[in-house]
Every structure is written in C-alpha cells, then in structure tokens.
Image (cartoon, rainbow, N blue to C red):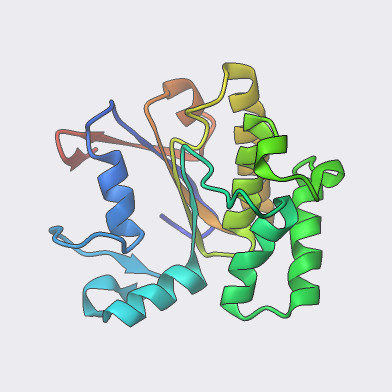
Amino acid sequence: VAPGEIVALLGPSGSGKSTLLQAVGLLEGGFEGSIRIAGTEAAQLSAHGRTLVRRDSLGFVYQFHHLLPDFNATENVVLPQLVYGTPRIAADQRARDLLTHLGLGHRLTHRPSQLSGGEQQRVAVARALANRPALVLADEPTGNLDEHTADKVLAEFLRLVREEGSAALVATHNERLAAKMDRVVRLHEGHLR
C-alpha cells in the first residue's frame, strides 16, 4: 500500500481477509512472504519492536467498535494518544477536532451506550486516526451498519484518511464499497490478485 493510498481487500467470508490484516498489523506471525511497514521489515522486529510499530505507525478499525464502555467518546480517542506520549491538553484537542470533523461535536461526552451504531463506529475511526498513523487497517468497518449508515461512515472514513495523509487497507466483502477506494486487491483461496 503506497503512502496516501486507500486499498480495498476484497474477498468472501472465510477467504483470509482478517488473517491478512492481523499479519499486516503485526498481531499474528507464521506467514510466508514479507511485510514492510514504514520501511521496516516486520520479520526483523522483536516483540517490543512490533509493539512500537503498532503504536507509532498503525491504526485499527474493526467491524465492532471495541470502545471502552466507561469512557466517553472524547476519552476513547484521548487514551491511545496518552499511551503514545501526547500531552493531555493536545490529546483532548485532537480528539475534539477529529470527533467534530466526523459530525460528533455534540456527542463528545456521551458514553458508547448513549451513541448509535454509526456514532460508535465514527468514534472508532477517530481513535484509529488519533496518532496520525501511516497505515490504517480496517476490518469490515461498516459490516454491522445498515446500508445508509455504512455509506455515510465509509465516506467520512475515506475523507478523513485522505485529509490526514494516511494510507488504508480496508477488508470487505462488499464490491460496492470496495469500488469507492483507490484500488481493489482480491483475496481468493489465500492468494492476492
């Protein structure tokens, strides 16, 4: 995936899309081939090195938002920035800016249980982009949403990824959504085409 490029990883359920994202995200090993992230060969990294690459260069969005239920929307976006080492005031401002950009300026202090599915997913998108990652890995990021909400969240995600200057690899089985990305790569029986 080139810097600034948004690539759809298209394949049916069970084709290995999630497994490939786990490998690219340095969450799984035991794969053939090589993975280079931000110029670093993954196979040469220690466990701590993989953790640093994930923290410094990657953002993750999953089909289920995985927000912390006791934290409000802003706090869910602030937390990864604090782990990264961003000062609290700057992290708060970045979280508010991202959430407002995603249409959630009026929901900053709401907990996940007080947000709709689409709003929860937008918080997850903001969280993934909070540390300005080089690459965002998104695994069926709109899979749990109705078609209208999915289109809206995907459009916001793609716009914000582009504005932030990140690249993205988005796993989906939805050809219509994949067509909205810069390039489509198909995964079939463990092979990329």
